[in-house]
Length: 100
Image 1 (cartoon, rainbow, N blue to C red):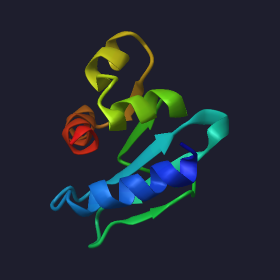
Image 2 (image 1 turned 45 degrees about the vertical axis):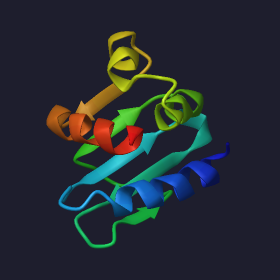
Image 3 (image 1 turned 45 degrees about the horizontal axis):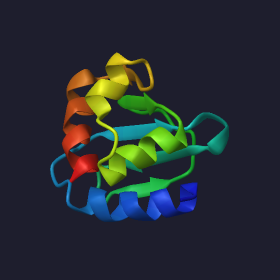
Image 4 (image 1 turned 60 degrees about the vertical axis):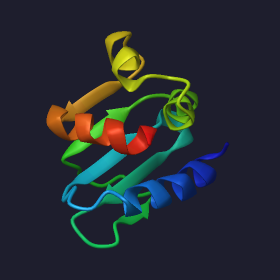
């Protein structure tokens, strides 16, 4: 699954995330970034490296595991595979959105 395919999957998941009202960045290092502006409806999703309320940093493979349900984001965080900058509360909300 490429970053474009992950972006497409994120669009469908974030469309269901009404009331998130935040800007979130998923940083996959050399594989790129996905920026989600959920302060508007529908959320704008692009590959720009903009300022965000919460930034999640992990490998693209780890993130694919979150979306497939084969990797638990909380365990990945505790093992150092996932780093969170910014609002931890927002990161916890994203956990349920991404896994569903």
